[in-house]
Image (cartoon, rainbow, N blue to C red; front, side, top):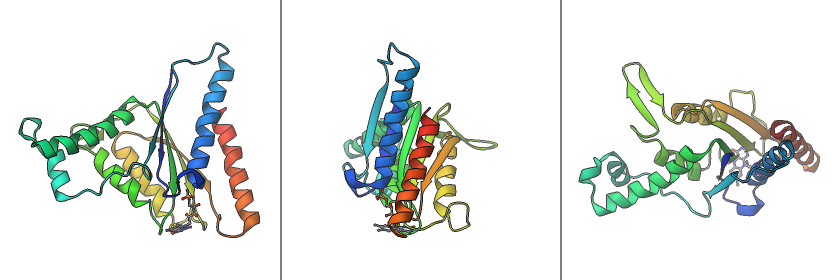
Length: 208
Ligand SMILES: Cc1cc2nc3c(=O)[nH]c(=O)nc-3n(C[C@H](O)[C@H](O)[C@H](O)COP(=O)(O)O)c2cc1C
């Protein structure tokens, strides 16, 4: 029994290349699990969190204060903000596998994903401070990130996105992270087809 959380962060909805790769991976993973266990895996669950369809608001001082306020002192507005954050965090806590569709926008992550990260990094809930530094609390999970880019950056100092996402996930305890890239998508039809084919082939290997 596995719970998969798929987080789509593209603004392009169903046409998004990153979301399509993420979906392909989730379907392949579930199909492989089914094939390996003929009786099926009736407990397998997929949660899809689409950050374009249901945007998480930008973090503001008011929202941050709500997240930091002691539970007994929260106003009604603050309780609402915390409930939104709790819902996102509960999905992460339930998930065994986290799959992220990650387009590159202006050299970084979509602001929709940054807003999401800002609402799931909660001291005492997803990480805690210790004398030896912060410790992530979302342990035992595996993450797969499907990164789509118009240009080519993987493995170069210009790829600021990969280290940022790895750093953030590690901070909340998710350290087992696999990146799959489809790069050069804006560099012509041939390069685009080849990049997507490579990513799909990698998906087949990872899901098996
Ligand atoms: C607003 C915007 C900014 C972009 N910035 C970059 C960039 O900095 N570097 C890059 O390689 N591609 C960039 N691209 C291209 C996207 O990364 C590429 O089209 C990717 O496939 C988008 O994924 P999606 O279809 O899942 O949204 C940008 C595209 C958009 C729409």
